[in-house]
Image (cartoon, rainbow, N blue to C red; front, side, top):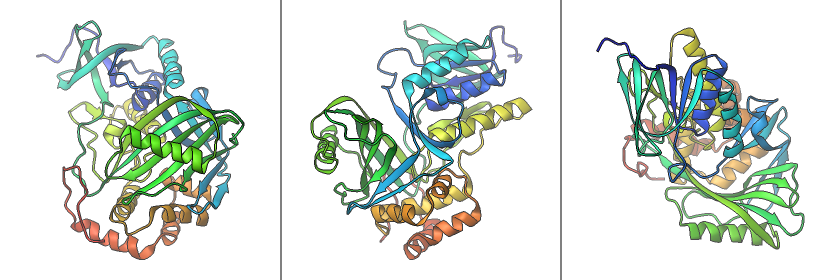
Length: 402
């Protein structure tokens, strides 16, 4: 082949219409890049409505898609004590995938060099002119898209070799109560007034949208997921015995699993093919948060393309990943008590500083100070152990004595 292609060759083809794909497509078209966004057609491959949360200072790029935000955040101890703070200038925000998708689609529709294609991508490979994406359309036809670069956000199969793998798994209810039960000004990030599993930790999560409306979730960090019936039982216990909501109706539900691991996710799978989002390691290993990282990654990719030097930078710095690996290992071995670890951090460290740390925006000196407020002995023992553990491709964490 000569390297020339007679049809349309976009600057970039973005595969997947989740948070990462939409963020990148939005950022690229604002930079004047010709983009095709490939999304699954209506049907079983399109995910259900999802909720993404993040903290940010000031109005961000997607403020029009924010359905709720909170100035005050709270963590509740197992015994009932509360740690509440205003992390100004940061504000906690909720984005729902439906409004977010409509916002980005409207921006793409207004750009003459952008388009949205509804098809199922099943192969991405290098080509002489860049890369191509082979798809199947909703009516069963074949479609091949061509771009100088392809950014693939589709979930990867399995987890790359790792030393530790925990799962953050949850089920949430959007509940409407018969009487006002919520304070819309305060979000509960972690409520440890729930029974703790034998391995890992569990907490409630409450995001009030109105005095009588909230997203209430039950979340676990552990090695295995639960059945839907078990999540439902945990939610009934939490809403009834802990929150004492009284009569309420469940308007909708959502459920998910987020791998929390020290695996190294490759960001490049071909000469001009890159992985983005969770598939490229954007999920913060110690927290499960992804949305803020994909925004940073999208800005960096757009800047790189504009400079003529395409690259997908690491979503998180080396120091952050090293600290996360230690924390995940300490939690997985049981060397640290999860509820006590997190409540002590929120009690001892100003919330704004801690949130910046969790988002990778803290200084080395701040990180040193935060480290001194953790269980130093168990954390040092874990840090010393990690270099001698083998990264494995199995679903289990590398075993070690406590």
